[in-house]
Length: 314
Ligand code: FAD
Image 1 (cartoon, protein in one colour):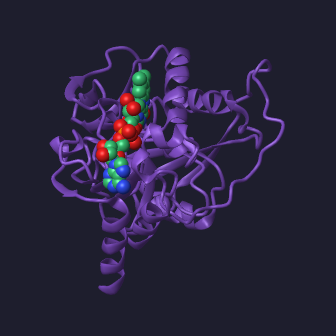
Image 2 (image 1 turned 90 degrees about the vertical axis):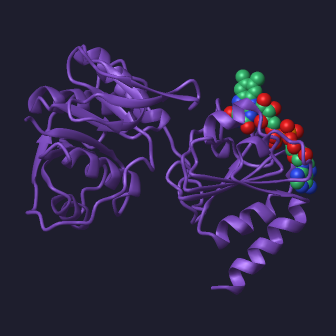
């Protein structure tokens, strides 16, 4: 069977957990190949080989990033045309979904988003209606382009693969593509990416502008900080932290919801978390309907106590 192609986009110095998950999934179908955008350093290349990747394709031109997603789409479609993979796996970020959709149009191929499992014949189990149901879907036209949710695959241990071959791909960016003219870099928080985190502590209107107890508990647990829309709309935390229907969809091992009522639009983004712990001072709050564990109490008392206890046990 033709190899499964994985798009890895800018991992930085080392691969992320979500890339390892995609590679684990790809190698269950046999050989894996990678379309790689970013700095392909020795460490990354070695890990790709050890994870069963035989070939890595990278853009010949260095300006692939300068055109929003247009350059990435041109690169990916070129690789798909030359490799003819059995399927393409991408992450489930907004950008990856946009790349998949645009590449799907250019390749006359079907796209499936929000995959949580992929069967032998590329029948995909995906969550729909904001995570309320799981359905099976299959691409019937062209090369399946599948975006896979983070935390749906256990990363398999590393084997002893050979160094993959590296192939440079010429993929001119369309001349009419919009160009990025400048960038600003945000200081790194040191916390894991929200969609990849195993633990998320999220705050809502109940934090009343003070995210400190939420951030301190997240840091004690090595987790990420999330928020409800009420909190992001109030400007208490950046919009990228919003979880829900119009924010990010997350599936961590543990989601701690603090001062969040559990509206349907919030649930849409977090109800597939393995364990949900709710802290809310209102015992009748709807969040307790989906919580595995609940604490009826003031988050400004409960969260610092939990943080102190965790730090004490280290
Ligand atoms: P509230 O509903 O006001 O709840 C605050 C909670 O905090 C209450 O339950 C209260 O008891 C509790 N509380 C207060 N003080 C304390 C304290 N000291 N200790 C403990 N508990 C306390 N929302 C999202 O979250 N994500 C989305 O992506 C999203 N998308 C939307 C899209 C659309 C089209 C629409 C219409 C709405 C969307 N919303 C979204 C908004 C959503 O409907 C709710 O308004 C929002 O989730 C409410 O946020 P909240 O739970 O923080 O605030």
